[in-house]
Image (cartoon, rainbow, N blue to C red; front, top):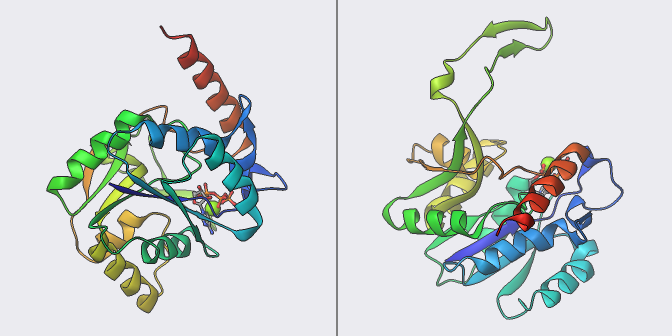
Length: 230
Ligand code: CTP
Ligand code: MG
């Protein structure tokens, strides 16, 4: 299975001066944890890291330390995640039929989750890892700050990555999105807007996205707990 890792962001909400994926987490950069899980997944045989040129040197050092030089290709990303994934799709080898996309910032995903998604993607056109939401979600009208709806929680799932798709279908959805000016925060949304089916694979509660400083602290706690397991 081919895996694309969007890693071309700046980490604005982290408030750090550099890409948050280079921040240390238990002595290793965030991206190293993500790559390590992908390396341990049996299904992943090719990895495309989508990044910005200012980070190449640091990314290359991480890849070398993990001994992944023969597995990893670097692809230049764009100004938004959506643009970056589109660049990644165009950078895939022509032999790639299906692809998993996993945010570099989701550094706690387990190798098993990659393998489950890869397995499930054999039988469908598109899928995402997701978990049922625990909070009651409110729809709020921004100007008045008044609640306009409370959707039934039993139908709500929180989207994670990996997300997986048939490459040609996702490419066409991205191109349709460019023509229509759609702005989305995940690839499933493009698939959905094009009327294609996206299946759910049960994600992991610990598969958080490192977004703000508190996420780094929680990720550190979870990794410490894991390292204490027999
Ligand atoms: N990403 C990307 N290209 C972009 C923006 C984001 O490849 N132009 C990647 C990030 O590196 C991250 C993933 O998409 O792995 C999810 O994005 P997010 O958590 O929003 O990361 P950032 O955009 O870096 O953070 P922020 O939105 O706070 O600036
Ligand atoms: Mg972002």
